[in-house]
Image (tube, rainbow, N blue to C red; front, top):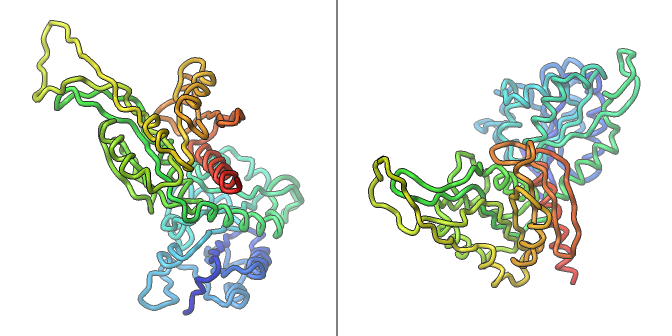
Length: 405
């Protein structure tokens, strides 16, 4: 089999919705737009539309069963997952959305979705009552938090006669969404983005340390979003249990001094620097060689300042885009604006960690983006992955503006 790697490859997932027949139009229009289309169908979908139709339209074999091997000796779901520039599931049933949200891998489509690192677009189609059901909407939110994007269903009369929101979006809307997502995937192509994430641990003795509650989730989400836009990502990570996004080069550190040294070693080769890490401002002046035993007496620790990473890189910033983060507990906007000026930043993202859902160790955040030109862009409470997407889009615009100057 011949794979055309010169143009984007779209893996089109077709599930058992009555709207499955409309996927043929989607496949045809994607091909007219210059894409290679590979179709994966669920068993239920094959009862509505013949796989032969999609094979004839696309010129590629259709896979259904997880054990299908169009190319003998090659694992189909891994090959498709790796060669896909984008995975589009249209139409997507409530059942498939639930399986994707739960991470099930019981057929070719769901297995491929877990194996791919390509962006995933989902166009739901189902009865209006099903689309509005809290369980379905919870699964949608779960997938959105992981970076999956949805092409919302439209209003209309269903095959069953019911009327409401649940109709598959029209073909031009779906094709446009694919093109826009692919364009976004490439807008940081060739750009190296350096990101710091997580906390730093400043040792007191071999057992104890000074740290903070940062989980690293925000920084890792920013790394994932930058990768989705085509960037080369270097992630300097403090201690965290998170799995870094595939394709990221990770430099692991423990202390603020180690993070400072790692940033300086990588900074000259980057075009964008995003400092999301919660770096300890102070460290113990002296680290005890052995564990201090408990006594009834008080214990005074003398702390000394850690290196200011942002202030250091500001001195050698040049034409780079430098983005900071500010976790505040009062006067958040005022403190962020002051930090932006003092550190010579292009952009700073600030949040009030005392607000519900906006602090450490949670999956959501409420950021306000403050720009060097004075613009202030407050974002609503959303998943950290969505916050990261907004931030990376802002970085793209800043890069474009700088290159036009």
